[in-house]
Image 1 (spheres, rainbow, N blue to C red):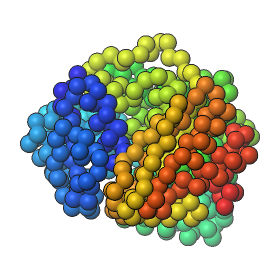
Image 2: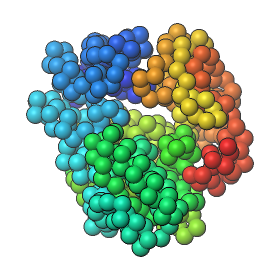
Image 3: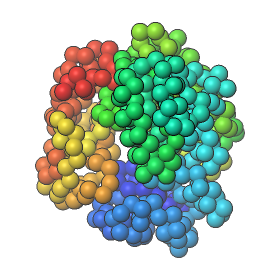
Image 4: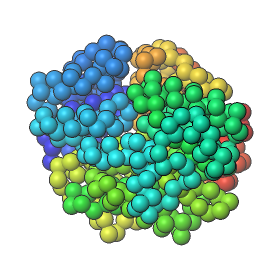
Length: 445
């Protein structure tokens, strides 16, 4: 097993990784910006290194500073968490070229799946269903208009190098496409340094379902069930649950088999997620993208399968067998995760500030993965995620009831937060029925 680990991230995911690593007896090094010096993850690590000012480009995306911290502290491995450098193939190559262990898929897999068009084409060749869309970037607006006319409106305009719900727009006709194409292209060039745009058929009433995969040290790829991620605002997830209330045993078998083929197509190792769109009207599902990292919502899978995904990541990176029998994976129960963000519960606009009160819920089946404690300041420099409230139980109904009590007990004063939204959601009949789709939040507003 790896003996010393540098966590190249912050907040709740840094604390999450630190918790498992310390349980395994691994020495943990945290890196942090000036803005995060007082956050819990810094104090909980065995050693902490200041790597720069608040601007992420000068700290959490500063590859030279992170590698220097690894060298000065004698770290053996680097875990990137999610976001920041987690899907940066060049950084992964540099880490390994420096003689360090990269806790994640290899750089070739990150590269192969990082470009959405390339990924779509790879998946189609591997027999994974893909939605109607362009097989090459739309070179210009005229090419985009032609492609959209051939597949039919509405269409999704997407940044080929994007992720996390960023760089996307919907066009219901040619006039809207002309506006969205220029907007998405400009955003993609600014955010990702790559203005390539793809056009896909857009499904208005669709569900977002993803499969957790794990590429083992012996070369096998296994699927650890699916997660429902259809409660979204601005194409970004707010709630995830496992198993999906929309997935039948027959569909589950097809989904998981397709996800395994996706991983095998790129020789995948470590944790990853194959994201799909599911059309309840037709029973069809389509490959959306693959996230070559640990997902924010991984805890719901941990509860249903009774494993620690961070531990499994560390074992794969160490060349060790998993803690579970890959041939006897048996899900049990249900779990829901709610993303507690520093944003108002109506328009979901960020609201940083000093946390005057922070009281986490407790009880059977309740877990909170938080990045903050009372007295901390939520700054405007990073993602608005404050904590993840994860609730598990034997059945979905039991989990929903526990979730209502947990949300009612979560007290946060200071920054704006979206806890009231979850109170509303858990009383929403569409959500409670399980028959919801990606439009549920807009219908609630």
